[in-house]
Length: 351
Length: 205
Image 1 (cartoon, rainbow over the protein chains, first blue to last red):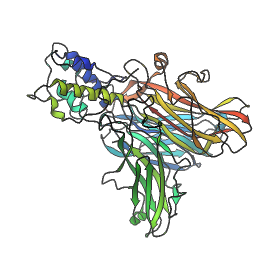
Image 2 (image 1 turned 45 degrees about the horizontal axis):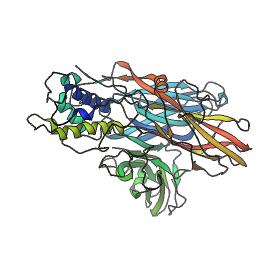
Image 3 (image 1 turned 180 degrees about the vertical axis):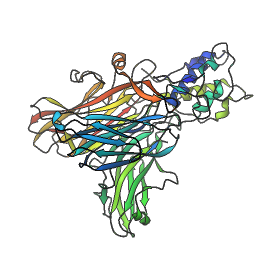
Image 4 (image 1 turned 90 degrees about the vertical axis):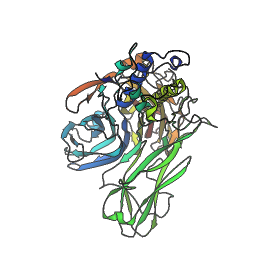
């Protein structure tokens, strides 16, 4: 027996669960279907992220991200939207993990063709059900420059889950009509409760990501946040899931930055500001020895509150007052010493 | 289309709520089931959250005409009624520095279905207000949601490569779409410069 993952979001009728009435096995079959969908439908690890990054002929760029994978994911797909500036044969070579994964080549259209290529690189990868790094390298094999317009990473849905402690698949037949409702692990009601008591099942995962190669990072040596925004548009929309209570207006997301400093004395800060305040990641002086994620991956990422969905809102945004967009502004500054801060990636994700 | 959860939140409960010899409480199991409905209601994904530094121009077209600047591939979540979750949309742009007025249009179309035939009155289309500024800003749109019906959702039916054991390739059902962003030269010589796009799913009211 196996637990099938439907291609749509299943539902059940809460009206079937009332006092004085027998709860049908069918109701728990529906709950098992919901559970299996939440476990196996696949997260969007990296929403389409842009950059208009130009790669010179013969060069290889590596992009790094911190993502929250699902424990049941066995396959994921990178989508790279790109074009070349030549009317001749233009080719990209893609690898994931970056530089070491199996190579796959894609022929790009020319910008003169008024179209782009969306290359899809399929990677058999077992998700860890937690935060981890995802990397991809793109080599320009064409004689002219190539431009990466956008890049995304999605987990492929599973068709079925195993009835084990990893997948937590729930066999729907164990909750069938006229069958005793079992309390075995991965079966029946116990299987359902294992999944529906864990809010990480159904996580939104990718919120906002940006990355570039370490040879062309964002750089800043200013001591002021003013004028030190990482992006042209210092307002990145965000909205999280409502998880804590029916009246909650915020939920937390996590983030890290990939950075280094140029000088042994340099100490810097990368700050994110939104409707609910600000959060700072410190880039210590020792980081000049090499690129690294901050805060260090040996510990937990930074977290901060963002608006969560409002169930009464037509578009999900909080409705108190004038519906407003919660937006992140990401900037940086030097707080001590001398030199330059270089940033090659920022990742915001839901755990 | 409508939300299913009654509590509209996630209730923290022990995973042992249904263990053997545990007393069966209707209220507790109702809460457990509602957790599932709420997690399903809120599992909508962020599809696009990007910026094009310096702005992205489309091909030059005549005054009053639309040009397709970019077509962004996305994968959609579909409800049990066979309709894709609505998509919350936002567009940032400006003129290319020349004097004039521009606007932008977003169309969420099933992959392979041309988006050029849809009108602003269609639920899968939204348009920004006209702008003549040269510095980028998020623009007001006629609608913050792009919505499909069951027919459009059916047209988006597709497959993705996957595996259930890490070795054997299988095809799984998915729903694929393109988010097409158009620019329009409204007045004078300015061309529309697209700088940012945001699109995220929401189960709706």
